[in-house]
Length: 330
Ligand SMILES: Cc1cc2nc3c(=O)[nH]c(=O)nc-3n(C[C@H](O)[C@H](O)[C@H](O)COP(=O)(O)OP(=O)(O)OC[C@H]3O[C@@H](n4cnc5c(N)ncnc54)[C@H](O)[C@@H]3O)c2cc1C
Image (cartoon, rainbow, N blue to C red; front, side, top):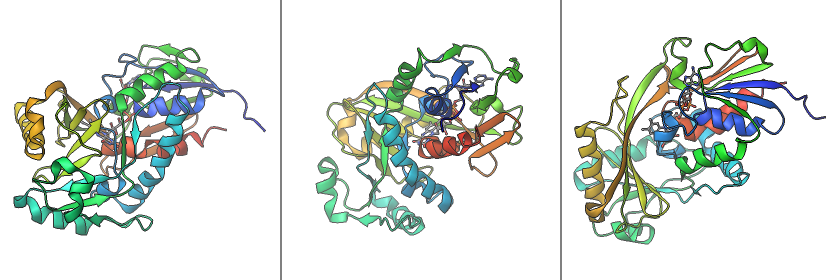
C-alpha cells in the first residue's frame, strides 16, 4: 500500500538536505528552506572532498560507523544512477603511501585498521607500479584499501538540484522563523545552522585546495601519511584534483590560511612533480558539523526530525543516516 502524500519542510539544502529531498520528492509535497544560495556553496558538503573511505576512516572512528559507511557506498551508487545528470562516482579502492621518514606512521596506520566484512587491506609495496604507475619511482611501500570510493560532490550538488527543481518549492530564507506546525513533518538538515538548538554542536574546520593538473594521472584517491593530519589527493574528472583536508578544532570560517595552503600544496608536490605546473582552481575552508562524540545524530521530537553531527563522515554515512531518519515518516 502506498504511503499517504505528506506536506514536508526540509530545512537546509546541503548534503543531508539534498539526500532527504531526493528520497522524498516523488511521494510528498516538499518545501525546501535554505539560508544560503541553492547552489550550496556555503555548506560543508560543497567544500568536501567526498571521499568514501570506510577502511581508512576506521582508524579514527568506531567499527559500527565504518561498517555503516561500507554499506552506504552501495546506496550512493543507486542514488546517483537514478539522477538524470551524470555524477562521477568511483569505487576503485584507495592507496595509502608514506615518505621514507613517515614509514613508521604507515605501519601504525596498518595496525589500527579495523576488519570490515572480511575486506582485507593489502600491502602492495611491489605493486605500486601496477596501481599507480606515475608514483612508482618515488614510493616503494603502500597499502591498498579495496572497495573505497569517492564521488564528485560539485556535480552531485548540481544534479540533485536539477532533479528536483520543478517538483519542490524553494524558499531562500531561514527555516527558523517559519511556522513549522503547517507541516506534517520537518526534516532538520541545517548542519551548523542548528547550533542554538543542539547542545555541544561545534564546527571542525577543514581546508581543501582544488587543482587542475594535466600532467598528473592518478587512478584512485591517494592518502599520504602526514604528521599532523591525513592528507589525500582525490582525482576528479578532467585532471582536477582535490587536495585535503586539514582538521582544526576551530570555529573560524575564514579563508584558508597560508600555512594550510602551503602544507597541502607541498604535500601534493612531494607525491607527484607534475603538480608543479598545476593551476589552482579553488581554495576553501568549511566547518564540519560535529557533536562531542563525533558521531551522527538522528533525533525526533513530535513531527521534527533532526539529522546532524556528520563530522568528517558526511559523504561516507549520509545515505544510511538519512535513511534511518526518514524511516520515522509514516
Ligand atoms: C574540508 C572538508 C572536507 C570534507 N571531506 C569529506 C570527505 O571526504 N568525506 C566525507 O564523508 N565527508 C567529508 N566532509 C564532511 C561533510 O561535508 C559533512 O559531514 C556534511 O556536509 C554535513 O552535511 P549537513 O547536511 O549536515 O551540513 P551542510 O552540508 O553544511 O548543509 C547544511 C545546510 O543548511 C543550511 N542552513 C543552515 N541554517 C539554516 C536555516 N536556519 N534555515 C535553512 N537552511 C539553513 C546551510 O546554509 C547549508 O546549506 C568534509 C567536510 C569539510 C568541511
